[in-house]
Length: 466
Image (cartoon, rainbow, N blue to C red; front, side, top):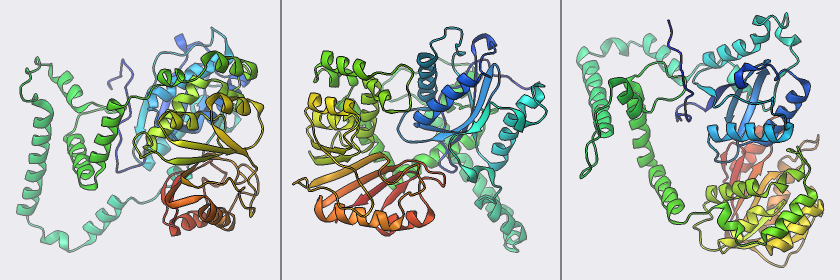
């Protein structure tokens, strides 16, 4: 009989060798049947579209539980934190105490095409197995928010190609048993020292009390979701990843990040001490729309969006840079610029005049901005200053969501104008694109950014000025 987990797993184990794809299951409290409802369906879709720290792909709502696929989106929220935020937003929107979620969730890390396809078929066939419909297509409470077609297309992995070549190569016959024995021995040595480094206490500290064998392995290896057994491969992979991070400098950068976050804590409460809280509450209550989670009134939840702004600042490492002159295009409510200002940067915004809510926040935060609509092949306004960094989050000025999304020529004009009239020598540009039907960018546009020396990480693009 297969072992069933009695407690939900915590966290997501990252594996640098494959992309991160999660299969999530969430149940209603006491398995009450309220999920398969048109209003609930619409509300959840709107929440998933707005809570893009993790992006939701295919999903199915059953009467008392739901399944979905998700992968990292924009931001630094952990998966468990994202799930909790989604639950709280749903509760605040529906305001119905009968619609409660079960504590925690169950999630499984997908590691192969076969695993993804198996889980997707299982998910889509759920209504059929429950006798609710005769075919998956007849079930109305299913869909797909963001698309990642590459997961549902069978392709031969690099390991499979090497294996196929190896079995067909005469070189395989020339490898002696001594060579194989040496390789196995080295692997065992690495695994041994990995376990030893995990198990031994630090010098000068008291040894921990002995643990039962099962708890010891779970504690030391930190088993993730969906793990059915303990294998030495996990320790080897973790050690290999650590060595790779040391070689590439990631370990040093990660250590510096942790040091700055410890040495210079940046919290929402400390930031709100720098602003007239009563006036801020008054403005936000004036424009608040209960249940709105997609359009601009969602930004009246200033504590949440200030927290998101702190995440952006940390991600761009602007909590430690020399004090810069920064322009934020599409500055919105100004939370990002407000955080930067408290850190000593000189900031400036550029956005549309509407909504008036934004216009009332900028004077309260003591930030300047210029009102301007960016159009293709039209130069930016003359603001009489140059900048060390230009940022643009969740970009909409590129025709997002329309049939006229910018291509190579439009971006070339925009970046050239930005470079010639807005940037100081050595300045940087950070762009975060919204998803389109074809993805965040076409292959041609990706090639254009790479030709300009860009570093690309999914929808995030870093460029140097000149």
